[in-house]
Image 1: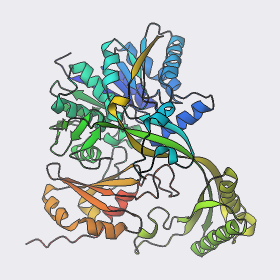
Image 2: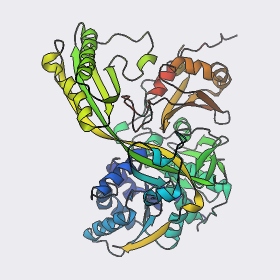
Image 3: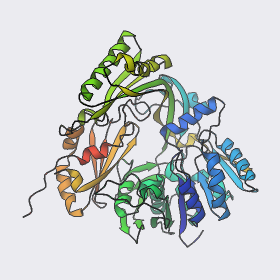
Image 4: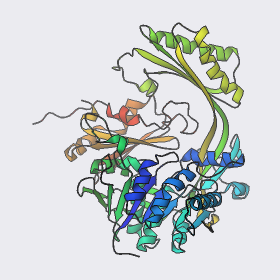
Length: 447
Length: 105
């Protein structure tokens, strides 16, 4: 426990996030904790698929981060908290230990937090899919993952037992940060104003560059200096939960109250009821104020007790998506691209391709906003035809790209730059499980 | 005029839904936007894209609105055929809405 502010920094905000800002944060952040948040809806399901194929079930960039970033942070006394364990936290801990040993770092205590993986227990749990109201077992396609979104408790316990590195799986994103603050300041799990503050800090930092100027620039209205050299964020959090969101001196980007406001609401439904496993945070009365250059003070976030159930993400292998693209330019480009799209549509019908859904877009015209594209949008000089189809079988999905590619010789004049791809669909559905049915446990290893 | 002249916005996604925060640059424009940015008008602006209902959450203490666009992602990030699978560009669609600013007295 400490009366000084806890310094907590971001080392990654998604699985393939940039390495170099993490190196900078570890080297110059003067941190108590460095957090890597690396799971998205699909990421965990894909990790489970890799594991089922005997590959590593943890984050593919874990080794790189333990080689380049983590040793710098550990050497300066920071502790590491992450969900890079993904589908295999214990395997992640073993690999992390061996990578640290290779760097000459021995004796580092690493905890793996397990128990979020419900795949083997699905039959007994008898869950219901939120989107359909039907039982999980009735989902079409093979279920490849089922993970409860767990809270901070297990991480806090690991830190309390002396872990220098904690690797979990589907820990809720803000809980990674909240756990550090609960441990660092000794906050109780039901100290709602502070739990709210901690969830708020986690929510603001877990998307990394989104709070330091990333995804904000809109010149000339919104200008961000040094965007290419933007840094990860860090927070200085006082014992009462008041936080200053900032970034390292000399990095590009920007931290302003307007950016923090955008990020407070990001991926939130009701700002007064942001549901997490550690509590329902209320951002609606937050105070967000400038506190110097690239420093924004956030206070007044609170929380109510946690809900009786945890969210569960269920990954289902639902077949394949096939895509093909080809470009047309010059006078008449739009008409030629439309004709090309029609040829592909007819060919797929003629070949009886068994597609569940087919979509034809003209990139450059209305591919992004579709029929909502305003009438005043100007006509383009060049367009790119994109055809996408979803199918049960890989063979049917592959026909989409093949038919686009064949426009090189069978389509309208001037089609160039064709590309095609087929990828598996891992759809993610959500469900709820009573909290008491999810038990977590820690396993330990040492580098 | 377009909404983007007096406000900024950010898109996010969760499952099949998208959400867009809308934040006026000046607090004095908050009551005006509360009046003109009705869920009905937002829905009309993007109904060709958003299949479900539009819900607006107001956070006057923050000076911000959060707009929930239900079923806006063609079935969700993980299985949609849409090019912009996350609906990242939806904020720019809403910022191009035309709004009327009352004449200065």
